[in-house]
Image 1: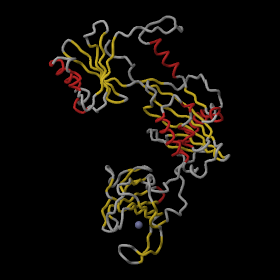
Image 2 (image 1 turned 135 degrees about the vertical axis):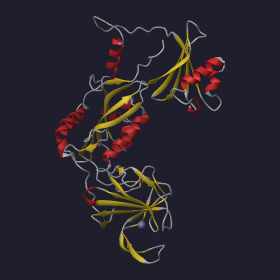
Image 3 (image 1 turned 30 degrees about the horizontal axis):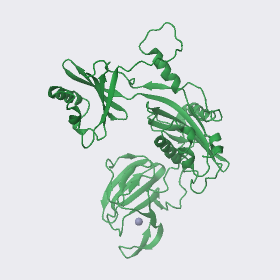
Image 4 (image 1 turned 120 degrees about the horizontal axis):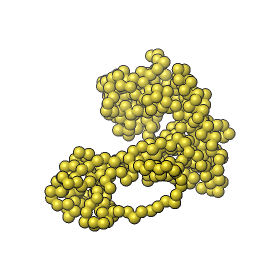
Length: 437
Ligand SMILES: [Zn+2]
């Protein structure tokens, strides 16, 4: 990045340090007075030997020479209460924790099933015990901003002020921003050097700095002097929120422009009369054909309910979705339906409903896609697509309060780098060292 964008790149993390410090001070102790003391580094009472399961070493192999046959049996029995010992993935980390005072004695064995779950095995008089330790997470709110020099992607993922955010997590956040602003701005054709972005996001972060979950709370993209704002809001309170502009209008359209997200080519357009390649007669083509590789995922273009899931002689595997305000969309010639999709299924915009194929009358793999408005065929490539639903009127009061708080987060951005604020911080999960001692 150039010096210009370094100056313009901001990042703030709310209160992570503050909260962990407080945790250490208060953990399990009764104190009459509290003050800051220099940290004391005790000698670890254990030696940790880290090994991994791979093609050459199974869990059994790792235990040979460490535990005798009886102990191994008891160990596996206890582990089975939390996980299937035969299904541990290659690469699973196994940490043997030896007591330093008695070097031949195991204090515990930790088996890391995934980034969020570790099974701790502890020896007892009767054999072995097991319990699950959830990786602790700290929930915080982070914000970032920067100037775009070349591409939006480079400006976000390459923002070196976001050094505390794992690069893969930056990519995830970019995908969210992409999804928020793609409706208003064509990132390939309209982005100009000097465009500017800022956003805030909430995340649950593990001790290693990676994110368990995270999502954008508010964002702004200034493109060619025009600002587009977006605020996350969850009108039903079920965790499935969406983005609205500062006036409560949806940032998205009610329909995606294409039911195929990956590579495709429009092979046949909407027309009232064309020569049918298979039937060899002239007839109307009241839809659009998207040629794509067999197996390419097909997305529902809008929220709705599946009202037909059939295999027709000419259209092959076909799905019909009913949307609000009298709109329907039809998807035909699919090789197969996505699992879980049946008549009555509720689908959200972007949900995969099936896969491109050539069932029915088709000369090659393609998706035949139709839109109708109150029964009348419409050309998906020409029609003015309706906007997504605005904030529901019965939620307007909640929206006004929440959107103000989230938009205000953006106004923190012109502050210097070392912002020292403590708010919105929550911890849950186990402490890193809970369990046997
Ligand atoms: Zn067609």
